[in-house]
Image (cartoon, rainbow, N blue to C red; front, side, top):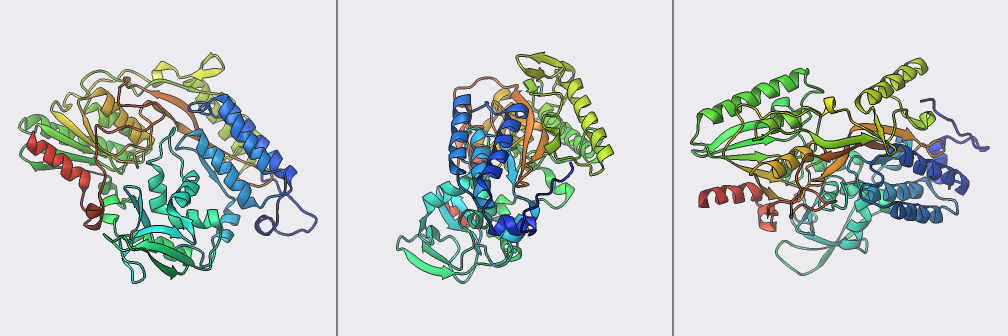
Length: 497
């Protein structure tokens, strides 16, 4: 979209004004009004987990906070609170690139990665200052519980889920701390040594963003909780681990862009070979499906994978709808194209696709045509034995859709931790992004409100992630030994059976 340039009489560059000056309350109010109107018109998940009264209430709070001029970072944190409150892991509100780059420059970051283990904040990096595994009680006088609560808004999850917040803390603690509390000259850390209770203090010093990223890449827990995969073949694997048990790991569904993509075709062939092998080796009675690192991806990878576990016909979702067929507030829409003519074409193509997939208008919503959500058959080699599914707080989007289908429609025993993605549904598939005209803050959300094709279950709670049948969390000792708690527990259950 065309960039709107705001010129102040001082003629300073925008990022300098944004960083050093307070924004007029009227400008912030204009952006906040537009932020709310965009979500009311375009975000089909706005009232999925919150009532209209609750949404109106948080906006009343937000408007009360901008009666006086505010720095951009303070206004941004107000928008983050709203973004998180809605309850969708696909929500994302971001600062202007130039501002964030300038704001994060220099030595301003907490130097070491951390990890939440059973509600304890542990140091997750071998270093000479504070030993690995030390429990952190406070930083610069901010107690850990208060500190973590203040940072939760930076990482969105579905519904009322909080376990997924630990993923954001583990991956971006230093970044969130700097955003929330500003640059620190030093960090006074109150901590105790591993397996001890005596509290000690140590002053450590901030590092650059480059060093922060490097330390994260070298965090101690990388072998167990890796969030990264560097090669296509690392995205999934299959192995027979005993005479009666096999393990299929699918770390992501980012395996090609669609059904015609070479990566997806290769994945489908791989699954065919794995399940053909299982069908001809009837002694393998147990299949462990490990999706603990699966943060989502693209169709039809999730649905194709489920076809090898399904025992009856199924579909991707029970229902799906959007709020619009024509893009609301197009002047603030963020296009992929930069040329004005191509932007018009992009908009037309997008709207034509919406009209085709969501043609049926009822009660202010446009519902999905059934041809985009057909009944699907189990694969001829679908597994007939006992399924064990390993889940974690990282599972999201297409990952959680797959895990919910497995948990709801098979004999699977789910082991691990509640997922950040919802069991009953989520907002997904199609993301859109807008840019606020004054502050240039961008906000993104997914527009398709999905109800997943799963039955109601007593242990599955609306607004929460997929609840495991056996909640198994990594212990402190397992963390210190980089031991795979959930997999070891599962193998023991199979042995005992």
